[in-house]
Length: 447
Ligand code: MV4
Image (cartoon, rainbow, N blue to C red; front, side, top):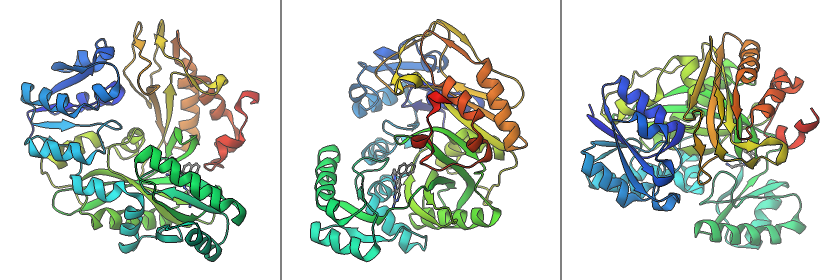
């Protein structure tokens, strides 16, 4: 087992990883930018090393400085958390070259899923359902037009180097295709240095349901059931829950099996997430694979009683997984608490937290790095915490969430708490009647 793990991240996830390490008797090294010197992850780790100035590219993305910090402190593994270097194949490779275990997949596995068209071909070959489309990259506008005619409008253009909504264009009729093709290609080239795009049939009002998987170093892959992440705003998730209100045991088995096939096809090692789009008839299609721990992992942990960070560390150390799938025994919901003003287009609201009261009680979990007097720096993600509730039923989990949100006091900055309170009162949400279009259509300020 590892003796010392360096955490190449900040905020709540750095704290989350430090907690599990300490439970496992593993020493921890925090790295931090000068903007984060008063952060909790710095205070709670056994050692802390400053890796640069505030800008992410000079600190949390600075591979040379992070490797140097690991060398100086004698860390034998690095946990990348989410974001930053977590899906950077070069970083995984450089860790390998320096004999430091990267707690995550190999560079080959990251690359296999980083290119979206490639990932789709891998999924298709593995026998998982994919969305009908161009079966490869688009050569030119004529090619795009002929495919669109075949599969029928509406269609969607996606950048192969993209993901998370960047370089995407929905096209409703042939007249719009040429300009959409050109803007998607240009946008993708500018954003990713790779202008290649592919085409799919556009699925209207889908749900975003993802399957958590875990694979060990011996080729075994299991699934840990689903998370419904359909409550998103501009490709930013705000609320996640498990089980999905839309799920049935039959659909879960089918999606779980498809996810296992995809991860097995690349001999996946570590925890990962297979994202699917699910239409209103229950047809599901592979969308992307995330090769990292995700923000919303705690809801899975709560309903199957399983520490995913511990599992990541065990798998990285070469311990085999149990070999069985896990099914939700309870219902869990997560609300992302962001330092944003929901009444003002979710504008970031960094600054000093003057008063803090955190909710508690049965079935309430708070994963957060904030404290009274903490100053939220403006340089990073605006998420300041995650509020998770767990109960026997969905109805109780929602009631508990409403109660916990009502107790949460964060003064000095604006947060998304008032938004979540209204969502927990929304009749469609309470009925489980929502898709990825829900937030576009819901005027919460009038609610
Ligand atoms: C789609 C789609 C409909 N049809 N693909 C958005 C992010 C990127 N990962 C893929 N996305 C979508 N792909 C087809 N063929 C709709 C979306 C989409 C979406 C997906 C998941 C969650 C929220 C979304 C919001 C808008 C569009």
